[in-house]
Image 1 (cartoon, helix red, strand yellow):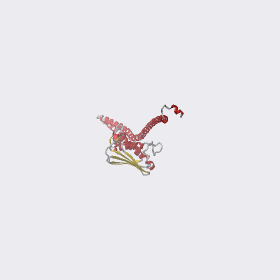
Image 2 (image 1 turned 90 degrees about the vertical axis):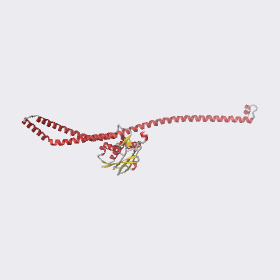
Image 3 (image 1 turned 60 degrees about the vertical axis):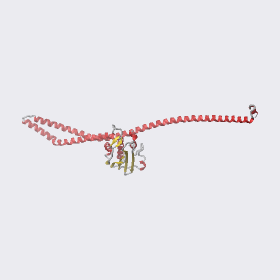
Image 4 (image 1 turned 45 degrees about the vertical axis):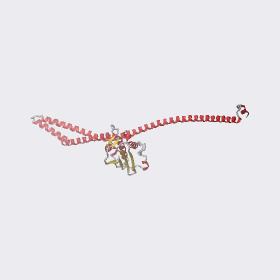
Length: 344
């Protein structure tokens, strides 16, 4: 109280002085609290800024990792495509090699026949220019008849027709294979267009013929399908994956049945095989990237995943039903008209 009295202003009542001192004390406590809270807020803001920077750096790392993953996935998809191309190339080469082989053999025989015909033609020319020399004519004619008999000219004449027919058929087979491969790949027409799915199936069958012909037969049940707006090269890749997978699922001679139907605004294409089937616990994973039921080293597990993505990009669906020991059916539904975002 002595201190209060010492600082009290003259004429100020003690009660008011005490009230003023309490107000100053309260204000000082409030300022101290405000300073403390401001410091806490500053420190919290600093911590938040540092945390934000750490999050930003983590996001950058995640983005880089995501881009690296996308690049790796793209490389794996390309590897799967190249593996398919390599597998098909071996089959196509084998399919082309057979007709080329007998065409080459036939040409060798035709060359010998042409040399024989040349000798006969030259002989008959000499006979025609022998004039009235009967002895020379008789001698030339005897030589020609001996040559015809020795070379069995009657057989040669018959064989000529067969060799030419076989060679023409072989050349047509090579042309058919090359045309099928070109139609299958359609590398020069990568954009969307109205396409005949039946033509796509037929060209794909020609390309994979060597892969599937040894253990399965093909049955086709085609309905009436209007043109489908699609990238046929990509859709053909789906057809190829399903056909090759079906063939590889055959433990013995089997059948692949291809059915097409129009269902409202959709084209439906089904591939049913009589293979070993897929266990029920694996059906839900067959479209997952890298999932495969094949032995290690026999596949990347990307074929069906790529196929699923292609059909999905076209606004369609691909579904599967399977029973172990009975077979598997894949059903593809593609809209006749492409999605607006894909057309754009």
